[in-house]
Amino acid sequence: MSTGAADPAMSREIAAHLKTFAARVILHGLRASDALALAPIDLVCMCLLQLNGPATPGWLAEQTGLTTGAVTGMIDRLERAGYVSREPDPDDRRRVIVQPQLGRWDRDLQRRTSHRAPVSLTFLRDYTPDQLRTIGRFVADLATAPAT
Image 1 (cartoon, rainbow, N blue to C red):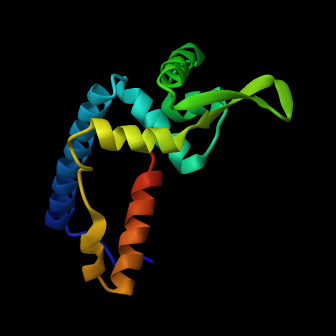
Image 2 (spheres, one colour):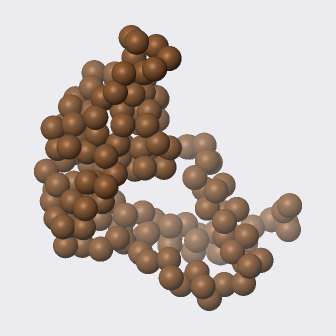
């Protein structure tokens, strides 16, 4: 439900804060990928696997925009590092499922990266349930908004 036209100054302020947050996330990802001797896209892949569970290489290609060849290289790197394994698809023997090894991933991230996550969400306890619902809707809309 919309409450009317957005205040342009407030929209610019929100956009500026989002850019600052995005920059912090990107820098954190670059530092983490360097500490783990992986490519930054490998971290994106692991994030997708954490959020969605095991997946096919084709699905990972769709989600990342990478070619299937590039996804194969990414999976090879993650498999060599011990962060994923290739398992046969029980429904189609021609396909494999990329199975994340999240315990090892989390352990290595904590051991090898000296930089903490770019933000702690403990500040959310200062918001009311209604405010949290609005924030939740905003973040969900942000996550699913089409690229421009």
